[in-house]
Image (tube, rainbow, N blue to C red; front, side):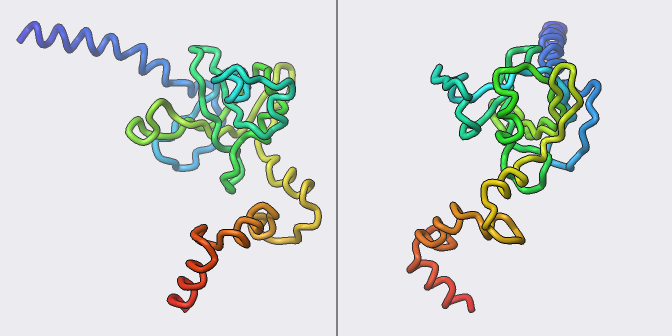
Length: 190
């Protein structure tokens, strides 16, 4: 029994540093979204192009905003997937992070997920980015940039007017299973 307690104490002591590494909430001013497993997180990280970090294929312009940006956390060197900005439209964080590619900044937001759902680590919902000597910038630029790139798209929900989405629907149907499948589904459900 004593040996079992000793082993349990050793395992608990070894787990403490791993748990401490998970806590990056100090100084965070992020807003809760009530997401699964969310934790406030504020840390310094280098913004990098994910393909570059993983393969060494590193264009000078970090992929011109067309590649997924990731954060290499300074405290432990962990690659954190920045999957969302602060807008409620689930468009990712690349537009907001691309201008800082190659720089070390302070990010504030939410680490989200549970180990059984997000194996390999939590995902980051970045709410603000602060470059050295600058004010915190909110991560809310995606929709403005989309509107600037699509001035003739019309008003209303962006996704109903996005030329890429409209082209896919014209080609593959609303369900993505082909126009014939769409026609059958619509006739069966009217």
